[in-house]
Length: 396
Image (cartoon, rainbow, N blue to C red; front, side):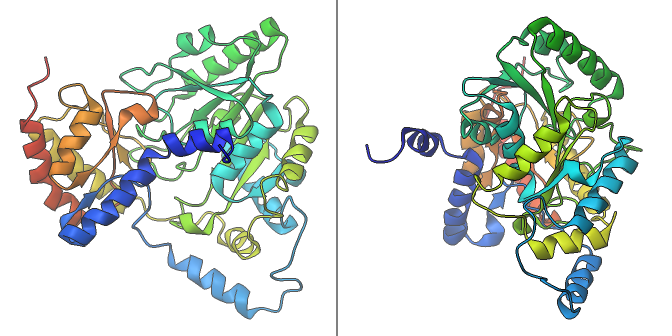
């Protein structure tokens, strides 16, 4: 085979979400765009805040030396200073600009974090359900994603995590608010997790890092704030993207930040910056770096997503679906009627509804619905959800 075995394996598995999205495009051509109900992709339909366009116009009109040129791989100093100040204020950790690397979205930040912590064959622990692409990001560095079986209330399974922490564990990956469940992990559980990681690092003789994936931090309902894992454990790497908070996923802008008290913090930061070259880019997009620094704490209004959440939840609840109302992000993660998530998602396709089986998130028996779609699409899909539910026996 001419194609590298690693690439062939990725192509064989592929991204279930991207495959479904492509299938949705074909269905839309056949049935019409407004008669296919696609809940697969976390692609925000809420427009960016008006301040975003204003910032872009201002930057383009100003005379800025080297406006679109190369820069240090870590990113523009003005943007790294902004990020450091923002993280210091929001997470209570005194981050400095030298510990910040501007990245091409959160996916790039995660891959860089894996690059500097993971040796070939190492494991990275995550609590299921977990984002489907984590394993792909990790495979590039010859690491293995080890999912701890999820709990039905979606909270961290601390005992399960502790039982998996051996000398081949490089890091634990935490995502809160969680994709796909919308769960927000409590401060108490994160504090307990930090103590577990400290004990395990001493026991195994190897520092276990915590990688905190936080792209949904601003998409929160009925909450005063989101406890950040970064705030509880010194040996942490924070990964962030503005894709969700500003509704600009196609612009690919994010960052990584190293906890100042992390073991080898300076070396980790320099390593992440150096590894941008290995990932095929010299630096994150210059225009986007300048824009996010000017926007400060501006983000999309959450109310639009709250309405969509409540509309979908009310309709599914009326049809007999079982789920926990998400506290953050923009996904609903119900139990699959009948217990077979793949079979049930196939039944939904008969109703021109596209959903993602929970198996891809390491939690079979559930399925994910991304409700960052128009309210009319949600309303029009509800009879199909009801018909699909009726095809399966009532849960015991």
